[in-house]
Image 1 (tube, rainbow, N blue to C red):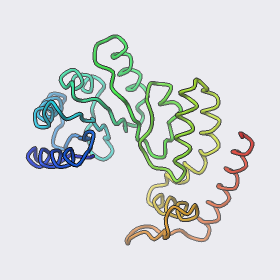
Image 2 (image 1 turned 30 degrees about the horizontal axis):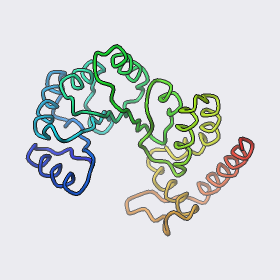
Image 3 (image 1 turned 30 degrees about the vertical axis):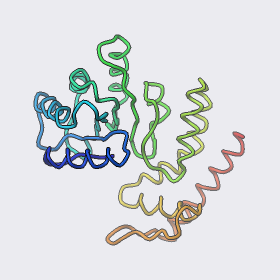
Image 4 (image 1 turned 180 degrees about the vertical axis):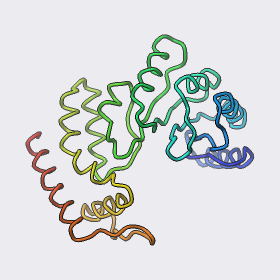
Length: 231
């Protein structure tokens, strides 16, 4: 459950309420007001104190939305200071070197090993992120089974198979990540797949053209052909 809030009182109130309802933990991102490394580290020390020793929490590293750049060193300092920080939501881009460094540090015993879920749009770097030490993905794509199958293949040690599955979906995943129109693409595909009844996007959201729909159906057809070849 996301518990990021402008003030710690609101963060604590929300955290207590969702934990009482059965949440397993909360996720917190840095506010845009923290800029220096020391400010970021101090902020998350206060987060740790606010949430208390009984609440596991996830550190969200998403500089595109927060505008806060957390270096590898800062993340490692936070993990050292906060034993209840048990997960990293890794959404930095590019961030493969950061993943490798965090895993190397835990491998040496410098910090505890935490779960790492990646959130880069549509899983566009998922195979590489898994190779660098990610445990899985927490992001959106109209075919979430792609991420399930890629993670499962990687866990079995079938790196080539993981990449083959990913490659079959990549053109459509890339198309869905277009700025502005991406949400309309995903909702259209969800409707086509029977997941939702309507692909309406609230105004001033985008609307697909007839050419967009033609592109999507062409890519779906090619995707299905690639998947049959992998079966």
